[in-house]
Amino acid sequence: MTKRERVTAAFQGKPVDHVPVCMWQHVPKEYWNDDREFAAFQLRAWRQTDVDFMKLSGDKYFPWPSDELENIQNAGDLYRLQPLGPGHRYIREQVERAKVVVGALGPGCVTLQLVFAPLSYLRLRVGYPAMMRLIREDPEAMKHACDVIAEDVKELVKGFICEAGVDGIFYSVQNGETDRFTAEEYADWVKPSDKKVLDYANALSAMNAIHFCAWEGVPNRLSVWEDYKAPVISWSRYMDIMDIGEAKKHFGSTVWGGFDNRPGTLLYTGTRQEIEQEVRSLISQGGKTGYILGADCSLHNELDPERIRWAADEAHRI
Image 1 (cartoon, rainbow, N blue to C red):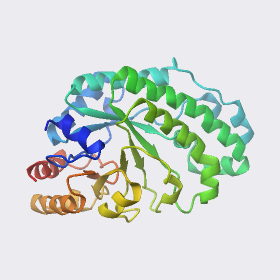
Image 2 (image 1 turned 180 degrees about the vertical axis):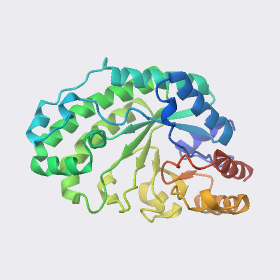
Image 3 (image 1 turned 120 degrees about the vertical axis):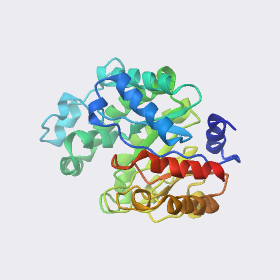
């Protein structure tokens, strides 16, 4: 199988010759302002690590840029939020950069572009304390804001898939920590805008992945995402304490993960032999149908890409 054939089969839940591998790191800030340098960094990562597909970074474009979110004080001000529109530079620059990256990687590389859920884009602009204060002050105002952002995120998704040529999106849903919202609050306040983007992306591509992000040190209330569907689910094995076999049954999709992404763990400190042994153990659990080898989330840039290559090489031998 070629890498594209292997990855496509894995997304479809079909058997593969070797379990595909994808782990990712953020692009350093010094490359953010030049699309060619940004693309060159991700092309080097593709070649150095020999992973089977690439999750493309959204670095530089995390906070939602609406002026209405600048120093916002009252939840009522969120009602003034209006869509940026498909021609806004925030959307156009991301689509154009993705086009350059996809072109550099070439047709043999399956690409997934990072996209955040609407509430996360807002939080990345105002911060967690303000997000929580505003949503509890006036949930309807926050729902309006998330609906507005969702319309723009859909334009972003459309640009990535239909114009830039990415195969699908890597949809990072967050804010599901057990101590943040009740299940009822999440269903009412957060889920509707999450699903607007996800359902739209699934209408455009059969190669999307959902990332159940866990990085706050608190496990997620996974039940709030039970009806979030995509061909592949990226979950946090170490934060949400769900092993591969359990995850496959729970999500009913191909699952993607296995290694702890945090510094000081095996991928950062283990010998090559120890990492290869863990790869063999993970693949024995996941099998060659419905499993992609990866990590819980982004790997820190202190990690030598060669260590990802060790894991990929071993997976490709099995």
